[in-house]
Length: 538
Image (cartoon, rainbow, N blue to C red; front, side, top):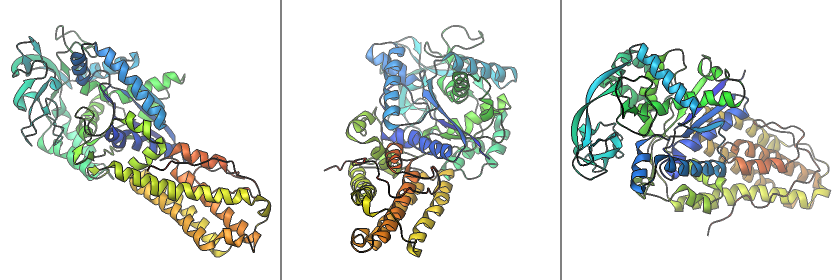
């Protein structure tokens, strides 16, 4: 029976260009996972959108002398170009500015308030006296108290990934004026995480198969004791607070409302498909599964805070898994467009075949630890693995068949060697599928490419180009066994490289048309010409 699978993907701030770390961290893994589950017959919705209210947006708007909406519109359009070129198969990619999102955020806020999980508290907030304004967390920078990184932000340290409050920073300064930040008392709404600590602990204890760095980090928050967190800020840009108890100049803070986007995007998807209740099949059905693809700096928000919001609200499904990736490193540093570490994604998409870029990234996904990636290694993978191994295999078999089609009209009986080749591929679907279901995507790709090498080895052993001269029926059997295996390779590689895999599949005539099983290939029929699948880099 098919399952309902929700694939929720981190919401990128619409504040700047993306880089390889973003794509390898969340968006490509999610797409691979979603494509596989659709192929095997599960009902999938994959949702995300551009985060329009993060303080990085207002920081950039201030720096460029424009309005925040101008920044959002610019980068949201840029993100849409990424997704189209990379063939990311969203069911709904939206923004946090939609009416549906605002309605859902207000509903969750009001429900948590009524249940006593939100309350007003006074707190200390950073203040810039020269600008006469309170400072949101990302408007404050200083030295991290844990690792002494000198450019830690008021909400998080990019170096050690610790979540922070501005008052914890050593020598905090305002990003607006560069002056030392002061701290003044202000009143805000707080989410009472402390009241949900036991329920969250029980939920985390029930999780199986989570990556060690995710579950251990999440449990460490519980073991240290959950601290109530402010969910409103002194801001002009953001979602309005649905109750008028704090006075003017305050908005709902982004970290609270952005995670609610997974639910609002699902509801919006339902409306777009003219069935306003269909979202319930993924959020209220206890047999449904939900996976949250994020980077490791987002683990606290998705494995601690979002489950607490859901537990407080009630009835909605909690995350089945949060397969957060660690960082992609460029020359030892975390990829970062703002700090100029690594090229932008648009630069890569101007140079690379998108499927080749997907492959190079998927081969190095930082699933268990930070992973160094270099352009030299990416080029080597493209040239040796895609051009010389996979692309060459497709080209030489299709060329042999088309050039000798008149001599390939009847087949000899399959030998044990032919049968063993096909048998391996019947098992390949199970082994690769299990790895993808466990979100071990890098291993799944390696396993898929191992079967490509198996076909090459089979051809080298059987040498159909020689056999054609003496035994055409035997040569036919060899070539159509290889073609059957190539069709399966294209199936296995489809989640990783959808565009080129479909080219291969569409060039092969079949009697059956399974997407995740061995197909019966038509014999004595020419293949469609597809040209070179990949280009070689000098």
